[in-house]
Amino acid sequence: MKIRIGIIGGSGLENAVEGEKIIVNTPYGEVYVKIGIMANERVAFIPRHGEKHENPPHKVNYRGNLWALKTLGVERVIATNAVGGIRNGLNPGDLLIPHDFIDFTKGRTYTFYDQKAIHIDLTTPYCPELRKLIIDVAEEMNIKVWDSGVYVCTEGPRFETPSEIRMFRLLGADVVGMTGVPEVILARELKMCYATICVITNYAAGMQKRISQEEVDEIMKGRMKTVIEIINGVVQRIPIERKNCMCGL
Ligand code: HPA
Image 1 (cartoon, rainbow, N blue to C red):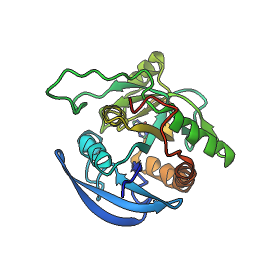
Image 2 (spheres, rainbow, N blue to C red):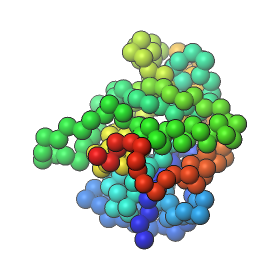
Image 3 (cartoon, rainbow, N blue to C red):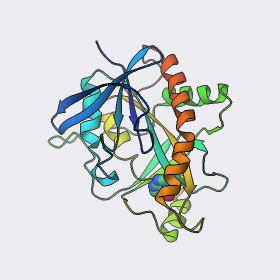
Image 4 (cartoon, protein in one colour):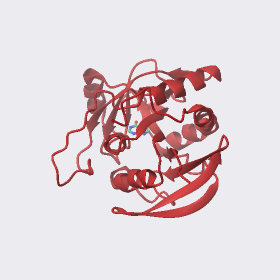
């Protein structure tokens, strides 16, 4: 049976879905996927950083992860990302659903098209239908979400410098993370709808005294239940047909 919904869990959401563990063979290596039930629907869950959180942001098997979901029949991907807040007014614990991104990564593999000059359109990089569903579900649950924002992706694994954050703010970025790119791009190359729930875990560098991994993990842990509830609600309501977006074209 085809599985139409995939979930990519970032740091802190490794155990968001219980289920049977399978290995999917891809041209990019073996990928660990959990097949679970959410809202009476079979879903394919991938912990982005690997089963044992062994892959740092620059070593995540982005191509393998997306290829594995596609192989299982997935058409819609819901992801989560921990991010730092750049825009004034964004606070740790807030949720934000980005509508666009800026890529400041440096050495990743960005495409499945290595042998052909294919240029995909990213005018609307995140699926507008999926984004709206996430926002609607959250609002109906009385969970505050920021309904748009620009995600800047850095190479990591270090956090940024204050000057980098000032530059990103001038460029129009609202939140900063390390794992959004190339995931969103690869999803589009495979014609899958993709949207992500960003959890703001800290003020970006220079906006608070220092940033610690412990603090990021702690805030993430605190928001995990809410994020899973939202994903549950979204899974319940994702229409079978993809009629309201151009992600599959
Ligand atoms: N920068 C980059 N990635 C992050 C941050 C940050 O401040 N917080 C959580 N992930």
